[in-house]
Length: 378
Image: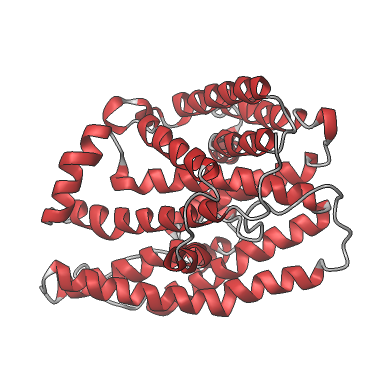
């Protein structure tokens, strides 16, 4: 098998489209459903595409699934390029500065009134909630109010990063053991999720999504010729089994046909595989490159900023939804650019500067923007 190109532009741009699908899910589908409103474009999309294909959560889960697959691919590539400490430093500075900046942004807009007299986000949050949210520990410690709703996916990512950092030294003939060991940890956790208290359950809940990142990891290992196709397929089936076991034990509602994760995952997998297969055959689009570069910041800020604007314009002032959506998207674009320039770009730059002297692992190449491994980045 020939080596893949150093930069997979389509995979990178797919991440931007995935972020856009999550924005649609929350600011269009979710807002309309929560407040009993109809909007013809969304009604048509649901009637002729989302409902027949069982694409749940108005494409929100589709976008998250794409993030996880891409992260599994890209993070594995990054770990093979970097020593463990450099890998850890870069991932920390990739994830946390934009997250903390977004939390500060949410804090700034929290006094914004709603018809209920509460903030759209962070209602009822105390000082401890705000502080813990910046560490993501609120997703493994019970009793905390989420500040940035989508940050649960970051907790999943961080768990995967930790596992890859710990066993990413496996190379050569032993490289297949990396996904195997990760899946063993995930399987053990989900099968005993309700056996050791609340903290253990929350850790297991995070681990229950890691098999999806393993699917991306296996794709990378096969694409690089590091494992044979039959090994990747066999371990891919094992990853799917562990993921289903996790849903059965923790969130069985997502196995029921009307709300099943399955069809969205199939579509996410097709988009992911298609982006890899079509690399070099389709032109890169500047607009998508710009979106991809900002996808993580967009992913973080769109909910708190966009929903606050929609609440104020549509529900409090009684103005048309179309106007509220336009203003919400404008505010989200501005907030995205702010977080991207003030936190995301500096965080990446600092990570590179700190690890510049770290020796790289030989025989590796950059497959996609390996500093862009957050969910929207995954």
